[in-house]
Image (cartoon, rainbow, N blue to C red; front, side):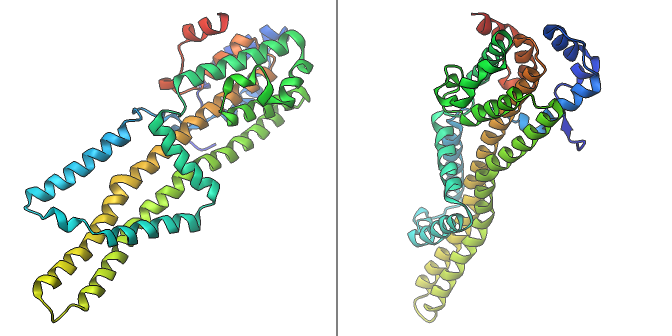
Length: 335
């Protein structure tokens, strides 16, 4: 893998402790270090995966207010006339063209993901610290069930994850549920760990591409907004040309209105839609990191590790800001 990827388990794998702990818990000989490293290699995560959401949901509101107040205040301090900035026709041209271009180039499910992602950020319905604990709790129950009752005991839960008493704890996080269910289904089929690692790696890559689509789509619209502002400005200049020879004040008003289009295009791109695309990207990276933690747990279950070791391996793959303390996790699991 490329050098810009880092493996959260590198210190553990190099020391050889984790595979030996897992092997001892399963009552068998420790596996070769390089085999375990290869099996866990798919959890290597780009540095971007650790960009967990740091701000509160109110950041989007506070930031928007700061942008608007500062821009308008600076304009008024330069003795600008506020009414000149209110050009409904420019808003319609730029806004309508932006929405239309988004619809043309983006599948409707992705458009819905953009809306739901931003609304989820505002209402606080994104990945949180508690979701990390819930994922670890589900992993512990799955590992304990398989350890006590065997692989066949997992089949009822895998056949209907939504109705499972274990998977049901994940609530609306269906992607995490799918990664766990699909991976454990392969475990119950006695899939070779190397093959399981490869399949899960490809699954995660596909899911990552899907998760970042909304952010990329909104980013493309943000990149296009300055150009759409120029379109609105050109239309305004065309209108101005029709007024040549008339009152000079009217010509000046038309020119000012045309320039507002360029202003709005740049402001909306860099002041609003660009940052909103970054929000969607962070939301996606949050979920990607938790999916990788779930996949790590599946690989440890495949190694027949102790349930607590399974959860500890998954916990250490969660970025620090969302990672529960070991004592916190242990209290929950033993409670």
